[in-house]
Length: 247
Ligand SMILES: [Zn+2]
Image 1 (cartoon, protein in one colour):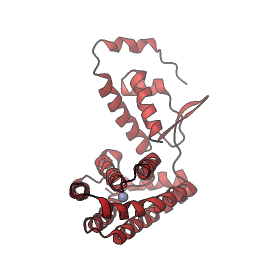
Image 2 (image 1 turned 60 degrees about the vertical axis):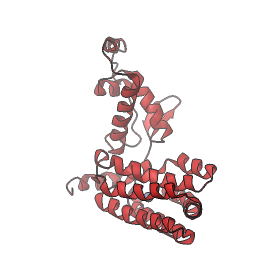
Image 3 (image 1 turned 180 degrees about the vertical axis):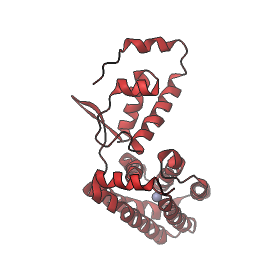
């Protein structure tokens, strides 16, 4: 472990951008390192070294790590400090989809019954935004797509009219973990088509069809991720490594 002088950073205080910008920037930058596996699953994070690499003080780095911890992407251990969360393995992927299967088709069915016209328009717009998003295989190229994907599911949960359901799904933070496992352009196209089916059923106020379209999306999504989770971190790295050439 390198011992970079803490005191040496205090001289950067003279001309510094607002703390919020620093924290947001550090959050997005460190998130990118995690999503793209440049900080490897399980890797211990050296805060001083990371701050030096990003050319900022350790304070925004610590704040960004705390936010990433609440996303579940970073873990804090009592004696060893921060480490990158492990990738989802086969069992944890199964547990996650088990809960999603229980909650999200029900949420979609309720949204089909309860959403007002403005909310229906929001769902349609979210699908259109995803169609327009960049869908490359590095985080920098799917950031907006992933955010809109997350928002699409969050809106349906909200429009179910049950705040507990909404909070429970939000608390799983599943999207980032799934994207970290695998994302490629063809996955993006399948996702858009499946989301369009869900949105159409909700717009038609067909509760049964909305639930079934959500079920199908979850089934397909899990199938796309199973082989990667099966291979564990090694499979993921091989997958990512070979994917780089196939832009
Ligand atoms: Zn989705």
